[in-house]
Amino acid sequence: MDFRSHSLHQTIVATHLILAVDDDDDNLLLLTQALARADRSFLAAPDGKTALTLAQTRQPNLILLDIRLPDLSGFDVLHHLRRNVITAKIPVIAVTALTREDDHRKLLQAGCSDCVTKPYLLEDLERAVDRCLSALALSYPSDSGFGSTKVFGAAVV
Image (cartoon, rainbow, N blue to C red):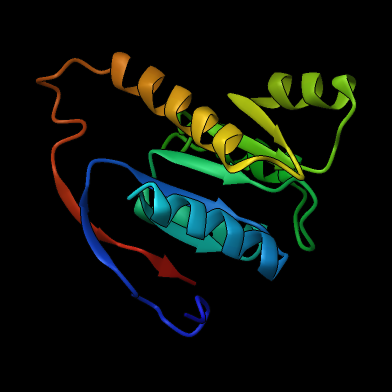
């Protein structure tokens, strides 16, 4: 399936919406296929500006963010997310080719919840997503309305 040719290729009942952001078509396809394989509801964005728009309008529960983007760097996207009251608390996992511990420390200090280094094993990505979503679920009481069932489509913008 050509993921860019379908604005809505799957509708699933989900409690979490994940925004995947990567400018490389192959990397974005891998991310979205991994999310689909895990029965996750997702949106996909090919650049930072689209990611910021989707984060504000759709308010995903988690963002998987490439750091080297053509229009805004992942650090810039993080900065904008954290300064916006609507997106400030959305957990972000950096999915990056940066491999140095110092780079990962800077990403965590900038507001990332976790880092996954490219190339990655799908299991490592799934574990990072599960950790973030589990931590998120623990931070909301069960009667808060968070996590109530919603229908989302897997969309590519």
